[in-house]
Amino acid sequence: MEDQGKKLTFFQKSPMQCPLCEREFYREELLTGGGRMIAGPLTRDLHRMYEPSKKFGEIYPLIYPITVCPACFYATFPQDFLSPPEKNKGILLEQSEKRKESLQLLFPELDFTRPRRLQEGTASYILAVFCYDYFTKEYSPTIKQGICCLRAAWCSNDLHRKFPNENYDYLAANLYRKARFFYTQAVEREQRGLEPMSGMKVLGPDLDKDYGYDGVLYLNGLLELLYGPRQDREKRIQALTTAKRYVAKIFGMGRASKQKPSALLDQARELYEEINKALEQVGVQIGPEEEAEGNE
Image (tube, rainbow, N blue to C red):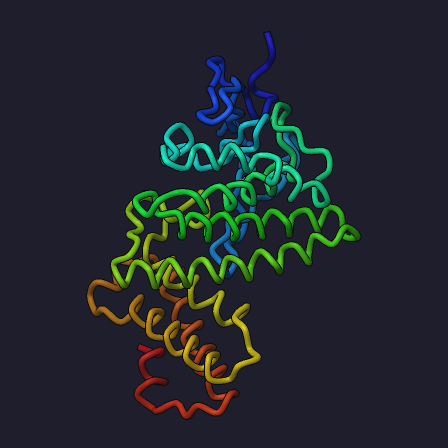
């Protein structure tokens, strides 16, 4: 009998069946405890790093959450996998070859029947972004696409550290820009009542802590500041002003803000000041009341 104490993952005993192509497969799950996961620092974009352990080496918890059919490359978060929109099951199946071809140059040797590597983990999120194009608003597909792009960017950074000559840093930058687009769209659609975020119960963005809607507003502002388009000055001003207003909501609610995670509040205040400086750099005058708001 295999020693569970030395394993990182296991495959479920009962098979899953893809709702599109009907292929049966076994989902891989991450084991926890036993010194497998040693939490490291929290990055500015709310990503929890993990330290390598002597017993298990490097561990990347993020590469396992997305369920992927190894035959047709249909991929979603686990809660959505078995119940895609009935009206779009046909086109999701038809897009199978397109999904595979889109990743062929980036990851030519993907195999979702074996223990996952960073390559499969990164690819799983990109595949999920493709698939959520065909999910209806009650699934909250836009914020899920944003989270998938952000996590794929994190995984791509990990790949770049391991393989610095493979252009994974370029892939990460592109994924951050896509994450900015989807986070912006998700907040706008939620604010206008077009697509609620209730279809994603845990907004993460990482696995260790759920920062909820405040985390979404914070990341919307951070991604806009760092990766928003800059060619059009007026659009840049408008986007940053909107992002700043949302960030201010995180710490601008008096007593309610005291119940929020201090790490997020501190990050949000710093981000607010950075957005002010970015606006000043493009010629916007910041009033003293706006500067004071970020220091409350």
